[in-house]
Image (cartoon, rainbow, N blue to C red; front, side, top):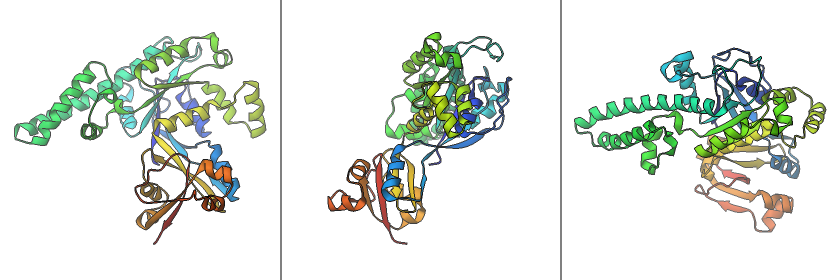
Length: 366
């Protein structure tokens, strides 16, 4: 899926360091604001042990994991909504992503400049949220002005939308994000057309130092951010960007030793990728044969017809049926043949709602 998570935050909070670790890239991570000006994009594989098991069952020659796309967006500053620090450009980049990964500094380091002069994760999170909200209010105000003119000349649709827009404006003026406004499905379509920044789901990342990572009780800064995220109805995770970047550069044996030393059952990056996948509202289905076992991303509530189109337009155009195997049944019985003999290979039509973990064989004609 061409769904992208944008990594945002104040300057010098560790965005590029985390992006480097995710993508094993070499985006500069310097100790001054606006080191990242043009957005960097990286495609990261989604760790999924199910794909490995499916490949073994089918003796697949290769595996292709599902992926999550990340964009490293330059640091926002106070006044970004008014153009400070190239804010208009950076806010425009956020509009192009589907979800926001908000990195918040939760480490002390006198050698790394903080644009606000002190470490305060809640203040920093609120600062970015405020800038996004102010930008949205400007967008809403412009649409209200446009609809008001159309309503005066008898445009009934514009008049109906105007009532919704004014309600949305009042909601956001009270300091609430657009995503928290209760709306009908039809109203949601109207709001979606505005491409509002505060409609996007957010995952907060508490970026801690190595000392804080080794001793979680050393600082209560991450907990402050977790409490804030919970109050806002958002998720949060904790990781050490510096440590993850170092881990990403090691070979497999060194990585294992390093992870064991730090007690990492699962890397912080794996947690971040899985959390981002969940944030985007995706699920995974699989296709497999002797040539390849492939994991695919599609939105939740997608149909078999949608899934076919994710693989190839020919699959969708010539769609006949989808033969669906459940992952649990496949691993329990050990083969597609055994599933068919047990009556567990289900033939489904275009409207079948794909479930996470479904293994699908598409039947189509060209």
